[in-house]
Image 1: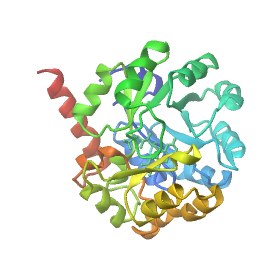
Image 2: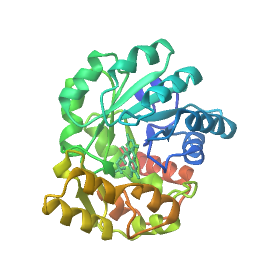
Image 3: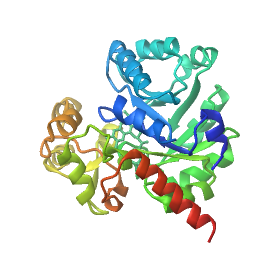
Length: 307
Ligand SMILES: Cc1cc2nc3c(=O)[nH]c(=O)nc-3n(C[C@H](O)[C@H](O)[C@H](O)COP(=O)(O)O)c2cc1C
């Protein structure tokens, strides 16, 4: 299926793997790119040197295009922005902030710039500053979220900008994929669906939690701080919400979540860990490789298209 995004990123299928903190390392990114999608390394708060090594490791595993997600709140964002420029990765996606100050440097290096946005205003602003495409992410998504749903955000962003739009949040099968395309997207980005992939290094406890989750098992914490996060309900989210209700300080709340995603991803700690995942977790129940995940979605989409 050819779209403006497959042409822009030179990929076979319009499926992008979200650049997830701790989760999206070289094995996952390379597996997605080898399967014809677009793999993305999640730079999160990692130092620039670590990301450079990760880029080299992806290149050992695939000769296909891949990208890096830069979390703009990271203390190393500037250095990582420099490293991706030196290494000339195919594309950069950005989260948690405004990438304007790096745009010129990346564009001059021929890197495609694709910010993640949660509103029409931000999408228009990114387009004005030269972004090549936009990821419109709905509140259904796992991790840090905005407030608009994918269903409402994607068509409004698609109407507001000329650059191609990628839909994210709540997509994990052919129906979700086709719905996103109908809303005006040229590709989808999936996070939760790839957390459980065979090639993902995430602890089995985490994968099991996603596969056993029901539609109502995710919870949003941090609304009071202005940085809401969606994850699977557990001891940590309950304590967090209790503290939030009691009007706890930002420091107290931050202390509770310090290193919590790492605890869940690496140690499989399902009590104190942050099991970031989206509302679509309820639909995910199979252990599959990235290739199987992508090919199944494309097959289902094809069947729906020819109905
Ligand atoms: C565990 C996890 C970590 C994530 N970390 C990041 C991140 O560091 N940067 C970012 O831009 N998005 C991050 N996301 C969001 C994903 O890239 C993606 O946009 C989102 O998961 C799509 O929604 P879905 O989970 O419903 O598929 C994360 C998502 C998950 C589940």
